[in-house]
Amino acid sequence: MRQIVLDTETTGLDTAQGHRIIEIGARELVNRQLTERRFHEYLQPDRDIEAGSQQVHGITTAFLQDKPRFADVAEDFIEFIKDAELIIHNAPFDVGFLDHELRLLGSEWGKVTDYCTIFDTLPLARTRHPGQRNNLDALCKRYNVDNSGRDLHGALLDAEILAEVYLAMTGGQTSLNLEIVPAQVVGTWLESITVEGKRPSFRVIRATAEELAEHNARLDAIDQASGGQCVWRHLDV
Image (cartoon, rainbow, N blue to C red; front, side, top):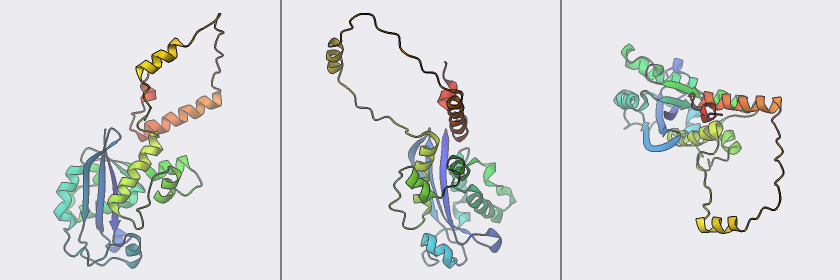
């Protein structure tokens, strides 16, 4: 399963006012593991950056003067996201800007969804944590994800942080760091055990209907977030 965790920075908030993308950052996940592959570009927008947006990401018009335009990197970007699932926090914003950039290149470029599927982590977070703040900083705190380097928003850094948050929200621990006990120690321990008399039957405590419903709801959420890859759904019972 190939997924691309993506974020953008822009000159402002509304494409209808001519605002453009000035940074794209993306990291690749394969089978829920970060790979070394990434896409990162700063882009010349051919317009000024609004003061409010600049305060958020710290990118200046002067810094972007010698950077490529979206048209220069569009083919590489499409190749990077093609046939993957894009994971984005508040996807309508980023996808709206990406579609706007593709539209400026010509109708033959289509839309982002012509190349890949989209998964929005914001509705998932709102479902898991109703009535709470669910921006990226709040989720980092909730899931113990280190965002200490996030003084300003940056597309690549935010994509990397979102990847960790997404993995925590959709599956929790992704690897088990279990201490391995040497075989000779296990053998000695087993030899020291003696069983006297008949062992009593184990007491079986069955899940309540409410507990089963909560369990199934959790599996449904994992299944939806992982694109039908919830392993518990495929176990032979």
